[in-house]
Image 1 (cartoon, chains in turn blue, brown):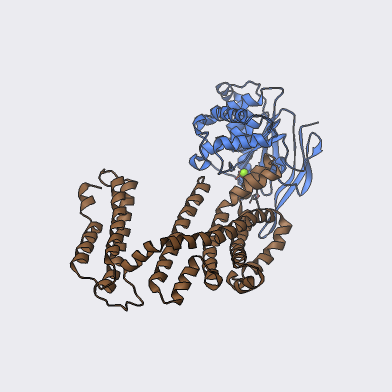
Image 2: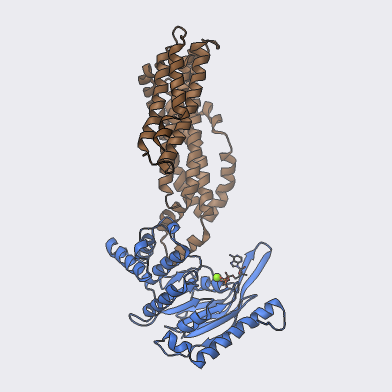
Length: 269
Length: 311
Ligand SMILES: Nc1ncnc2c1ncn2[C@@H]1O[C@H](COP(=O)(O)OP(=O)(O)OP(=O)(O)O)[C@@H](O)[C@H]1O
Ligand SMILES: [Mg+2]
């Protein structure tokens, strides 16, 4: 049995002009400890899908199973990094993390222990100096890193991440990718990760499997396994022919979708 | 600001001119001009104190900015004071019975200060009780009702209806049904500030960013923490604007009620002396109320800035 089973999920939003489907017939599964990336063009329903996995709303049709049980709400087994960082603006960077840790039921822990843990994770994402700052005082990329630190500090068995490195520069991004892989594969057993990204190289480097989505309404276009053994070395895999082939395949799937959207027969780049 | 700027500016010039003209021209009998000069000197001292606080660092800086603003304000006050003094004490252009000289008002203000303070205390007791009660009930009720969809849908039309009644119309009835004047005033102030606080809290809850609520749900926030640590702080901006409206309503209601039925208090002071056609004291009362309201508003804004420091 897979950790996460998404079965024929349909979701429609109530928009001003009526009902509009955002996801239609989405099915795939994620194994225990598997790292799955979801890519697809903007507006194809990736965030919506992650919201469903997080349990923020129920699907309009189909079902989502975690460990075989239907998801009916949010749960302590999942932590989420939202695309919009959604830190609480009235709490400091540290306060945001401590607050999340407290909700996890670590009320028994001493406040000083929670603070220490929060600071440790802030240090891991390179924000040791920002602990006392309010989100307003942080740049977009810094806020995003606080949100990442918050989710990682919760140390839950499932991680749902929505373009977590979207606002972060290439150098920091590489560091964070490695940090994420380290934390993913530490402790007892790997975490299960669903990771939304626009960056094909990022998806290949991180994932065991890539789910490519197409839009209007969102569907799963293809599931592509990523065969490189771990631990992966960035420079090592990028040069292989297998990498180039995989990358090409994904790029073509992407443009195929784009061509359909534009309505042309072929897209010349 | 340079030394030159500190010495040669329009505020200093106005002050010197004021003093020179004041002492050169004779005043009408009983206009107690010395007190007007004292008032001018007090204003000027304020300006000089601000100047002393800002270093002579040649312009720029927040300190010298503030000094400049103070200078402008003091300059304006001196001009008004001068016009008032000229029209009354110096040239008697206005009817002395209706328009007392500034010196008279200033002198009375000082002489009657103990009475003003006792009136202030009596007023504040009523205002504080009614207003604090309104905050203590309006905010929690607003949070709970705003957070609960069904309650919100019921409360919305009801508040639209009841909140729209100008609270001033409750005054006569409240005085009739409640045993003491004090309890009636407290009740009216409570009603008057409750609605804006409640309604603003209600709408504030509704306007809290959905994404923040999702974020809270994703970390499994407990219902109590959801209200106190997510919804409440997210609603503070609205609550504060409701509280500000409530506060200014309370002042109006308090002084109106006092004018109708009190035997003490700031509003009563003004009403009592105007019944005796003692207009200098009426002006004293009005100026005093103005000062009290400004001081309270000042501290209120400080509180607001503190509560919203994360913005
Ligand atoms: N709250 C909402 N109400 C109505 N429609 C919505 C809502 N949220 C999203 N949609 C619609 O659902 C579709 C999918 O949106 P979603 O945010 O899931 O896309 P996405 O794949 O995450 O895009 P991006 O890569 O730009 O983040 C879009 O067409 C969008 O217009
Ligand atoms: Mg998205």
